[in-house]
Length: 153
Image (tube, rainbow, N blue to C red):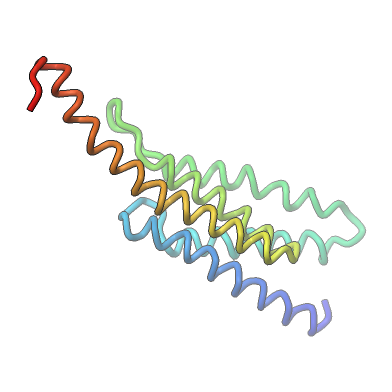
């Protein structure tokens, strides 16, 4: 690899780390099993594997290396999912790790705008949709109590 290409790769890695950090901050703030560092490593690793699959194996199929990112994410995601009785936790974190790998892969192929847009959509889901969901869930228990007791407060 030329020095110029390596400098571009370093910039890509830094961008992937930054975008992944934005996603990981939400998970860290909510004290989830995979937080800031995990998301950053997922994004950077996905980016680096994608770049290597394109440039280091020019005679081969670059999709072969990149396609192995998905089973690896399945393995990591399964580790983030915890089951206690009927309660399952970590599905959103596993999903955010999976989506973060796509952000890293986008940066790796040079689709920086796509990676930025993906990061914004993922952040929107994790933060804005979570707030909307929390508001909706706060109204449901009162209605459930009304149905259970037949009384209106």
